[in-house]
Length: 304
Image (cartoon, rainbow, N blue to C red; front, side):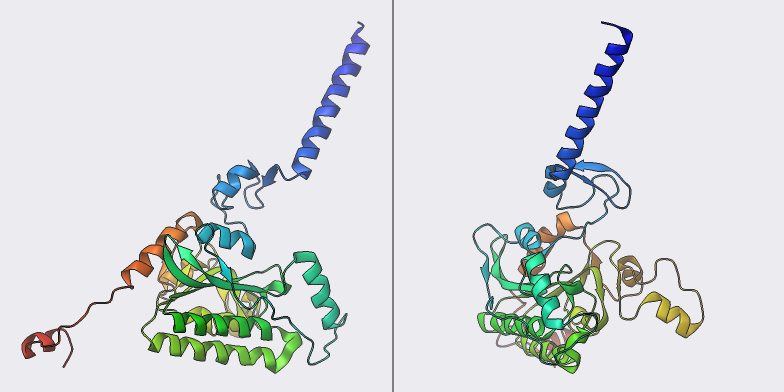
């Protein structure tokens, strides 16, 4: 074999290997981290709950994956799957709102931006809502508000703690005031839930903004957040232009909110299920006061 033939065969082999590698990446066998650029075997990444093995970047995941990560096998029971969004205002910007809804449903396989249901976390029953940013930026429309309200009311009636994983750009502008009304409706359902001495835990993921952060996302008994999530009401540039000053680099991050007391704990995704189960168990059997308590003891623990 001549040197030319050897080089041609080597080049052909290298080209074939490259094509095979490209096919494997295209088939989803490998995933590249958008932060550090590390390439990980997708199966290993899923085993780590879609958290980068090199830099701990929490990749955005859909509601189906979230439910799989949190809920015990064969315990998930979805609620209100029949509720579907409509176009009450006949809203149109670049395209008709009804057309955009249909296209997004076909693209994502979702009916709207939240999945709700009941299940168990390490054997503890809960009512769970999971927002999905893939559906129009997780925006809160009438269906999202109605499903979350019904979820909370179901949890109140059943005596279940409520957990909502928040991921949203805020209220859905295409539904106008009907969207903004959901803030008060969900908040009212939460007030009744908490008046029944039942636990509510919101989990703030990237991003949680707008009308969601201005209502149910910040009404929890215990507020958890994922690392480095963007959390805030208005956009950073809007605030800087209004205040006419430069904001800190970590402004509107989970870590910044924890430092300033708006978040109770930052929980990495692989630890979230265990943490939620522990919190639910801690609040499942509240301290009971005996029927007859000496007055001095009662005063000491704040009964009288």
